[in-house]
Image: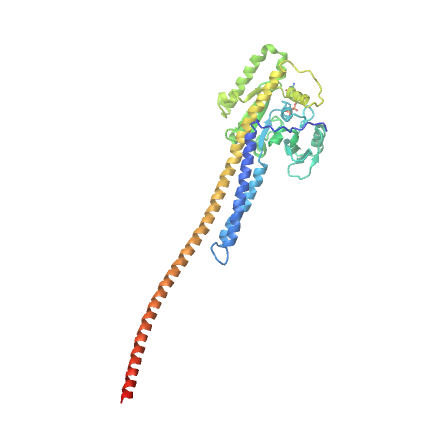
Length: 417
Ligand code: GDP
């Protein structure tokens, strides 16, 4: 279908921190799985007639098999999640498309949806939609089809729609990044519900703001709520539509520093999620529209409006810079939050199984000591009996000898008479 496959191994991407850690922890859990299963086989062998382990010991160890299985299932599905927020038409869908190097989500006027769209990798070659709580797959081949499917299926407001896109086509999806597009923060009063339902496990939040205006109260409010529910959320601010600045180059620096100062202030002093210095590394001035166009051209996809405004290269570099910092942040954060608890649990399971085996070992040792002791006592008793027997036989022998002697004496007396 003309799409270029992303076959190159993206080895120097910071996302590899997560990808490698995920592989490693999955491998470790394969080993833990083997270890627990071996322990169960062993327990089976020592439970029952010979009575070293009790049926309860066996059940306890067996319970770890399903626990390890459950963790392995979660680990296989673990991913990095980024959620995009901002007012309607600020360019959230366009930013996501630019990051995916393709027009995947419908964008533009008339395509506003009132649901959350979660784009994630599909292991097959097909692209399809699935609504939350339903197993039905809706095949989609293009953006227009996707837009159509979204408006045609009677979706509940603010529900979650999964968009599965072939992993092979996008580096981010292949490296287990999941991207969530949201309805504009200006269209709902239910911010709390949104956060609880879709954001608690997000590793990074991206606020897509409009560089043509200042941050709005609704946008700020949303992140105030986020920071009450999640400790130290990772927030990036994209001042999108920065291409508009090209028409007024004389104000460019002034406008930029004004926006930047306000954003730094918002992240560091208002939300207190980072220091002013860190905040400076989280704020970018970009044009998602231009970035998407540039990438569509690179992939030799047909695009309209070939002329880009002055300074588009600088804006594109800033977009690439954002992606790099974003990748570093999301992979480190996801490793910390997703894998730390699993590795703790893995360690505990291995420890518990070892304790159970040690318990059986100790029981076996106790039984052996008891047996040896029994044998020793038995041995002593036997020796005593043996001694008694020897004494008795000696006494009998003496008696018999004496009897024989007296008989002989009597016989010889009789004979000599
Ligand atoms: P969303 O509602 O936040 O998802 O916004 P969309 O991504 O649908 O974008 C709304 C409109 O703004 C679309 O027509 C986009 O083409 C346009 N747009 C998005 N990013 C930019 C940009 O950086 N510059 C300009 N000039 N237009 C943009």
